[in-house]
Length: 282
Image (tube, rainbow, N blue to C red; front, side):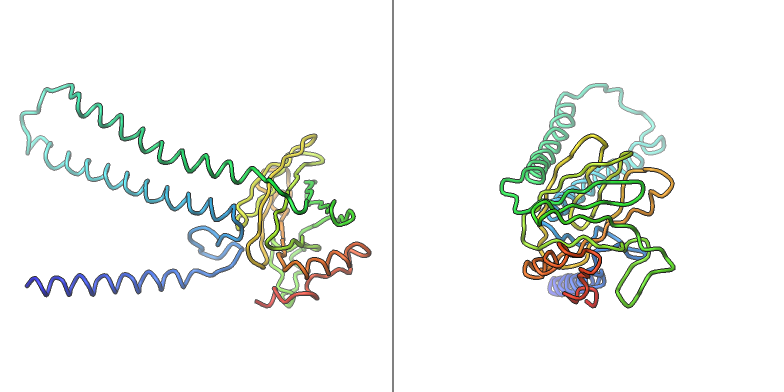
């Protein structure tokens, strides 16, 4: 009987492992919103990886708390209802329990706070920037400047639905007429401001969401780990076309970025990153 139970537990464990692997494999590795998508978009930067790790830790802590409280509620309903316990206790204080339910939440908060402070510090502090990207929010598009690439600058507006070219891999409400091009494995300093009202430049795969405030320059940074096309949007209600301020970033190898920047210095409109890489076909 004992051997049978061991074998049963073994097969159950194997089944759950295969099921979990199948579910994970079914999640598309795309840096864009998916229909009926679950979980977070796959991280593409060191900043996003730290945020995802913290999210996963919090998920298990919250799950344990919910399970524990649910168990306590069930015990109370079963053991202390009027039928099972017609004569209730009149005890009003228990020093041991009061200490426990005070200390344990404090310990949980400390466990959460320590990695939280580390993430805030690491995601905010950039010691050695290798290039800078300045972003300006307008109603309702984004302006970009590359100070370290001889002042390359351009405006990026959403591609209208009727002009979407599926052959180029363009996405409805996400593609822009001129995408941002950035190199991978590079510490990139991000300067963000606005020209009119408050906007917010947000790219979930890169773990970035930073407000663009008129008259003020906010700063952050990221380091993109792998080539790809990453999308974001304005995340601060900024007027009637707030929903039509997408962000499209092409992260490419450093040599491809050098080729693009050389072309963009002379003619940004003809510096089509699609001719230099096949990311859109992947």
